[in-house]
Length: 212
Image (tube, rainbow, N blue to C red; front, side, top):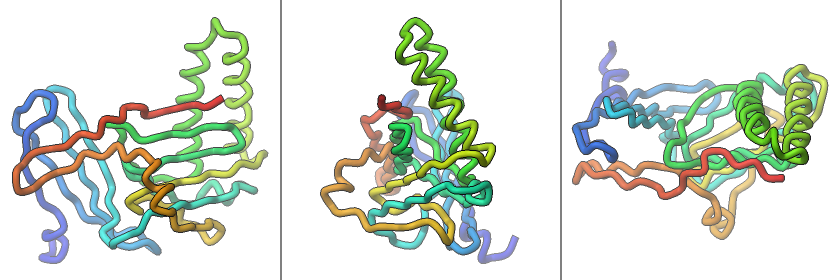
């Protein structure tokens, strides 16, 4: 490992917010083509607590990315979703908001839709006794499946008050969020205080919210 890469890979220690035992945090630098340097942060405790995030190292302002999915090529557009990122599909009334157990990931639009589809399938099964919600869930599943197969059209929006999420595509449009809009967004973040080795947990715990 080179000196440059080793300085971007290190570990720190704090206390687990659940069991208060020592928690090792792994920090790993990465360079995403056409986007820049990021830091992947992961932590796992024997008590089952887990945390993962991807932070863009360049200073960013609150941002909103929007991509209209119009063909199968759009499904390959790269996505960086941090724990502070909210994903919206307005045509389906779907919001995926960050919570205290949110994890970051780097994937593509198809991967994002797959994740949402899995959540919708589970929610639909839970609502089997509610005919209206069950029917709506099946409709959303069908639409998502068609878009994943390259046969439909949807809009994917990512909003991040810390600017740590993005859609990387020539077709993606980005907008600066106003302070008022950014304050309305949940963050789902765990804030590490490296001086005091303490953590502050975000109170939000709504990892997935499906709006009718």
